[in-house]
Length: 279
Ligand SMILES: NC(=O)c1ccc[n+]([C@@H]2O[C@H](COP(=O)([O-])OP(=O)(O)OC[C@H]3O[C@@H](n4cnc5c(N)ncnc54)[C@H](O)[C@@H]3O)[C@@H](O)[C@H]2O)c1
Image 1 (cartoon, rainbow, N blue to C red):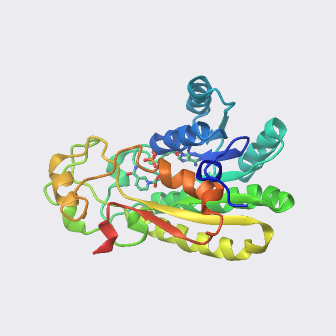
Image 2 (cartoon, rainbow, N blue to C red; image 1 turned 180 degrees about the vertical axis):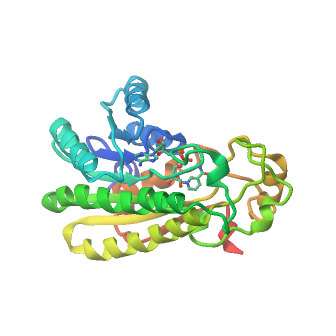
């Protein structure tokens, strides 16, 4: 029987873990899940923010949410997170690998994070790969075991437009970073790890295709967050829709990939970038 469109996007009763869930986009993902009736598990380095965000989601949407402190790079943390979710809800239906080393989270200062390639600190390169790729590996491994035993599950990995192309380095000409007031760039570790996310996604999608687990990724474009006007001008000239994204513009893509609306989709890279990578 053909299901209604509303039913296809329904997440009622589904339990979805969002790593880095207390961050700017993580909170949007959690709100979208709750609005569709799902239970959002906000797992983040900051336990305080995670708990606060979960309480806010429950209060606003009337669906039980859970906040957990965890570091995606630490296997014991990831395993403890899975145990806590299973204890609370009995299952895990979805996982959004969203945590990343960004200039505002875990990078120990913008001056180091935006260092030139020639001077890029080795420890920060290592750390970005640890959070952005190894963290995803550990979370997929631990949550995936649960999904294999359920013979059902959906994983959404968060890549970036910059995982598909190199940034045009000229977008940074004459622009300063709002955090430092100094020139900035897209660090090589970010772009490289996000490219890795895309093929990691294809690998797991094919590996688990016969286990009832779907694995896809989203490549979002940059979200406007008080950026330098010169940077915005330089960047948006290279975006067909001629603007950066609004913070709430990935909710539809997240809901689509998490729900049965995308039931015939696995191994895909959903690019939501205003067309930046189309020309
Ligand atoms: N904001 C954008 O313009 C943009 C564009 C493309 C892709 N993305 C991607 O979207 C995702 C979310 O980005 P955001 O802008 O919301 O970033 P953010 O910095 O606001 O949030 C990241 C969250 O991850 C958490 N985190 C960092 N390291 C962690 C770790 N080791 N373990 C657990 N949690 C950890 C942080 O505490 C933070 O809450 C990232 O994967 C990012 O690369 C963002």
